[in-house]
Amino acid sequence: MVRVSARDGCGTVAIVTGPTFRYGYVSFRLGSTNTEQSRIETWGKHQMDQTVTAPAGHPRRWAILGVLVISLLVVVLDNTVLNVALRTIADPVHGLGATQSELEWSINSYTLVFAGLLFTAGILADRLGRRITLVTGLAIFAIASLVSSYADSANQLIAARALMGLGAAAVMPATLSIIANVFEPRERGRAIGVWAGAVGLGVAIGPIVGGLLLEHFWWGSVFLINVPIAAAGVVLVLVLVPESRDPKPNRIDIVGVILSVIGLTLLTYGVIEGGDAGFGDPKSWGTLVAAAVVLAGFILWELRVEFPSLDVRLFANRQFSASTGVIGLIFFAAMGAMFFGAFYLQLVRGYGPLASGALFVPFAVAQMVFAPRSAAMVKRFGPKVVSTVGLILVAIGLAAWLFVGETTPIWIVGAAFFIMGVGMANVMPPATESIMAALPREKAGVGSAVSNTIRQLGGALGVAALGAVLSSVYRDQLGSATDGLPAAAADAARESISGAYGVAAQAGPAAPELLSHANEAFVTAMHWASAGSMVFAVLGALVALIWIPGKRPAGAPAPTSAEGLAEEQGVELVEA
Image (cartoon, rainbow, N blue to C red):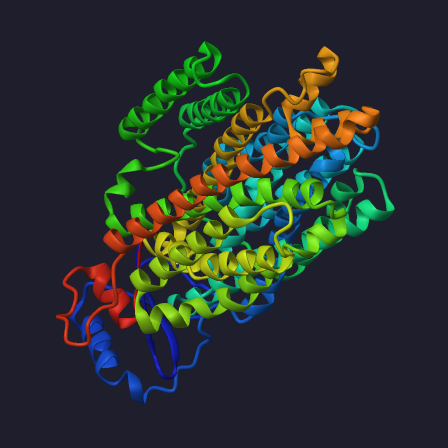
């Protein structure tokens, strides 16, 4: 089926082959007779004189976008709230006594299941229906959040978080693919900007809500808060969001999904083990080698299977591959900074959960303000300039952490977060729109899955890799500061700065000296981790500068391809 939607000043008219009627568009059936062709040509010549009026997209599209924002918020809230709760979960008295590695896995178990199943969730959404997939995902997420809130051990929390990742895997691609189906291309960039701004809203609300909950309730309340939000989302989705699906769905690539989950799990586990035991340890490098083998097998399988979970040939498209690369690099840099920033604020600076959460607000405010405006910036300056400048701003914000110490004025930390937020707000919407524009509407679930998988994988590897750098440098810098402690206490203090604070609480007169050494070691490790984050942000800026297309010059010749002509003229070509 090929559908061409032509738009003029009067509205939208769809010319459809086959019995298709979408969102109240006026539909015509194309035939092969000269009479019918003549009528179509006559309509094309005199379309400005017609009185046909039809809405540009679904008539409730903006209300639907509001519902999708609520569905997105519950997923974003969970991750930002967890960052604030990490110290409490690591506390052996008030939390679960989780180690640094267990804290990382409480994040990565969620992310790996999420990233590994996004392809499947996107395909299921296109096949079974995007609304039912979204509702199912919200329900699973609510149940898993309830289980997480009452976990009795770090291992139980890690398992429950993995189940939350399953629910989130259904939610995220469904929200973005629904946007692609209810908005016309001319409005889609703005809608995706609002969608990305909702991430900033979640970042703003999450730390503050998490701080308030931790000030008054037990640590499990940061997960319990997800339940009413998800329940409200389910009701609103069922009431307002229309069902949509691919009319010609493909088979599910079970082998590809299994290989991707195994490969990504091995990759992140190898990086975490490298931070704990050193990358020279066979358990670390052996796991990384196994991950490389499995992921290579995944790529080979995807190249030969008829219906791949990820069509790796898409990456031959320069705009598609550059956009996915930019998303992965910026989340690698940003999520790693969020991880060590939470420990710095709560331990080295001594801020409580609420105060430390409030210091993330500048990042979120920048996202909320600038993300919805990014579409206008791209229209004026082109995606290359906007994305490159955005990534440079992120690199500048990360570079500021190189000068942050134990007594640095706290407004500098807030300013660094704000600059990072402005940068990300001008990178994510245009990159996401580029990915979605490379695929037809019927495959919107797959496009959304690619965008979210790269984002989550980048964030997971950023936390794992920079967490490994943080742990390794921290242990080296701590040196002989734990020599006078009992063996068990010394091991706990060397494990992480959270462990050092736990030991110091029972160390008596030796506590001040131990904390002084631990703070110095952590700040030095944080500088190394922030330098690594900055390198990846700069690398992303280079990718954007070299490969992301620039603004089309005013005197440039018209595009010759059907897709380019469609984009130029505001006409959408869909093949299925």
